[in-house]
Amino acid sequence: MNENLTALVPELALLGAAVTGLLAGSWLPRRRQWIVAALAAAACAAGLTATAVTMATHGEQTVFSDTFAVDTATGAGRIIVLVALLLIIGMSTETVRGHRRETEYWVLLLLTGAGTLALIGANDLLMLFAAYLLAGIPAYALAAFAKDASGTEAALKYYLMGALLGTTMLAGVALLYGAGRATGYRGLAAALTDAPYGLVAVGLTGVLAGLLFKAGAVPAHFWVPDVTDGAPTPVAAYVTTLPKIGALIAAYRLLHQALPGSDVNWPLLLAVVAAVTMTLGNLAAFFQTSVKRLLAYSTISQVGYLLMAVSVATRTDLAQRSLLLYLAAYAVTNLGAFAVATELPDARTLSDYRGLARRRPGLAAVLVVCLLGLVGTPPTGVFLGKLEVFSATIDGGWTWLAALAVANTVASLFYYLRWLGPLFLTSDAAPAQAHAVQGRWSAATAYAAAALSLAVGVAAEPVLSLADGALLR
Image (tube, rainbow, N blue to C red):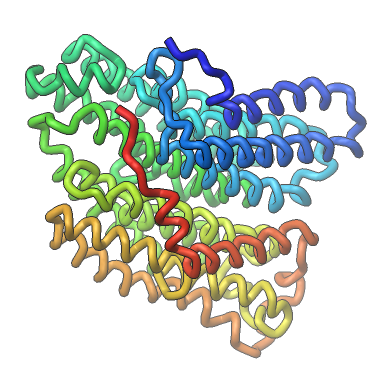
């Protein structure tokens, strides 16, 4: 058993900061609670440093009886999650500053971030389920952080669906264990090829149900628009970004490592789920007038594109690099759009953004970059991410799915332009207070996210080389 704790420095940094912050917050006066936020940011920075050192020294390994893998996908996923956490901390600063439960907010964010990192490296079914719980339970509390009617309703829906599909996932874990007499992916890969087909199929469907809920894919997507609309905007940014990173990398690792030779036709299942998810998300976003609900349905459609790479996990060598590049580009681009929404708390509908280019040209420029980036417009990172995913899908034999994804990409331009159009109208129909800004931190986060979105697109080759590398078996 490899019990090398240094391999888990990013996860331990977040957990240690959460415990330290909770204890410190009990003694700090309310005006000093920002120290816990600084501690959270320092933990993310420490995790990024440790990840960079591990990847530079090629420290690939599995630890604690092969339950957690530290490899290329883990390293890239850690970087994406920790950078996203830093952006979420930045846009949350003014929202929770001086709040009587400010410390609890940062602690919950750190805990759910640690759960997401655990999902990324999970190499065992029990580890996968434990990570699912750690990533999910603090998120339910975050959704209800404001303790208002809409937030409470959103958190209740989030929790009930999470409990239902978490139970389904646990039942799937039990069935796969019964079929393969193992929980580790290496043992399952050897045993499931000769296991009863029906048992493996039902068990895998149960496990995937939990991961699809976490990602917000059809048919487990119903919570996404309600939670995004009812939760505080920084929390909405979190639930539409971080859980997807953890769930999709976890699904990719599970399918690639535990079921490469199974007779169960899971590639076709995921291809169909990807097709339905991207189409439903785009169609539902067409006539949304609420900014947050539009972004919620947008993120559902983005999950559909991301699932394309997962569906060809064992059919092409391009799947992993395309998935990781797209996740990196999507995370910063989506967070940039939410940072603008956070900076303009009174602009809740598309019409409230009328004339923003004249009053707040910097924020309007960020929206142009991020919304056109979500469409897949060069030179943003999502453009190259989509290009890589479409190429991997075609190489994996799903040409029909790539063609449908191109059609959905063109169609998505409609509802993003419905938001961008009012920015440049000079009419004073939108009240001036709709463009009142919240503070410097949200604006700085928006600019940083937009710059990162462009940087991922311009410097895609180093990002792709970072994402190349086999998963540990």
